[in-house]
Length: 139
Length: 292
Image (cartoon, rainbow over all chains, first blue to last red; front, side, top):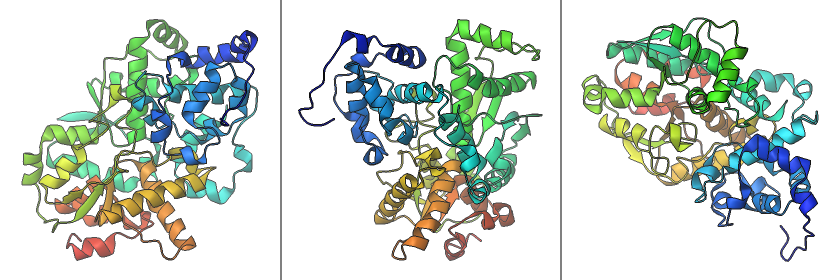
C-alpha cells in the first residue's frame, strides 16, 4: 500500500461477486482485523511479497479485491499458518490467501503449468513437494 | 502393542531413512507399526477452502481405512501427513452437514466416518508417551555432547487445534534429545516455515529461508539440524547443497531426522540410514561423535 494512497471506495465494489465468493470460500470476516501487523511481521516469506498480508486484508476491507487478485502475495504464501496463529483477532489469513488463489484458479488460470516443469525437476523433487505445490497452484 | 501406521508418499522414496530408522526403534519398545493396506496419498496440504470437499476425500478415505483396521490409533511419521489427516478428522467432526455430503458421496466405501473414531498420532507424541526414562534405557552409544538445533517447522505446531506442543516454544523433540545426552541449542527459526512447496516454482524463497535457518543455527553453535518433516528435510538439506554450489563461503550443516540420531544411539543397524539420501553428508560428524 502506497503511503497516502487515495482510494475511491464504493459499496458496489465491497459487495462485488468476487468479494462474496471470497467470503464463501474462506468463511473469514476480514472486518475483524484492526491492522496490528502481527501477520506481516511473522510471515517468513513477506520480503518476497508485493503486498504484505495485513495490507491484503486492508484492501479487502475497502473492497479492493481486484487489486489483491493482481498481487503475487497469495502465490508467495506457503500456507504455514504463522499469520493465522499470531492474529489477536482470529482472522484466518491463511484461509483468505487460499480463497484468493481459488478465485483465480477457478477462472481456469493455473499458477503452475505442470507440462512446463522440467523433467529433471520432477525427478529431483520429493513427491511431498510436488503434490502440495499442485494442490495449491493447479485447479 | 500394535498401532496402525500411515507412511505417506515420501517415506517410500526420498525419506526412506525416516521410515527405516523409526520402525525398528519402535520395535525396541514393543510397538508394532502395522501399515494400512492399500493406502494412498493424503494430499499433503490440507484444503482450506470451505466449499471444496473433493480435496478432503483422500485423507478421509485414509481415515476410513484406519477405522476398518480395527485399531484406534494411526501413527504418522511425516509432519505434512499428520497435519492433513488430523485436520481432516476435525473438519468432519465439526461440520455435520459436510460430513453427511462426504459420506454420501463415498458410496463405494462401506464404512461411515464421523471423525472422532481414530486418533492420529505423530511419532514425536508417541515417543513422549513412551517417556524419556524408557528411551534412555535403550541408549547404547553416547552422543558425546552433540550440539543439535531442533527444527520443528509448522505442520506439527499450527493451527493450535492440532498442535503436538506449544507452537511458540516447542520442546517435545528437545526433551527427548537432551535426555539422551545431546546439547540442544536454541535458535529463532526453529518454529518457522521452511517455505514448503515454494521449492517447485519459487526456489529463491526457499534458498533465502534455508540460508537464514542454517546461518542462525550455526551462529548459535549447532553441529547438526534435527527435524522430523521430509519436506523440511529436502528444503534444508538439498537446498543447502545448491546454495553451496553458488556460494563457496556458505557453511553447511548436516540435517538428520531425529529418529536417525536416536536409532544410531540405540545401536540399530546404521545402514538403515542410507546416507546416500543426504545432500549434505552427515557421516564425518557422526564419525567424529563415534556414532557410526
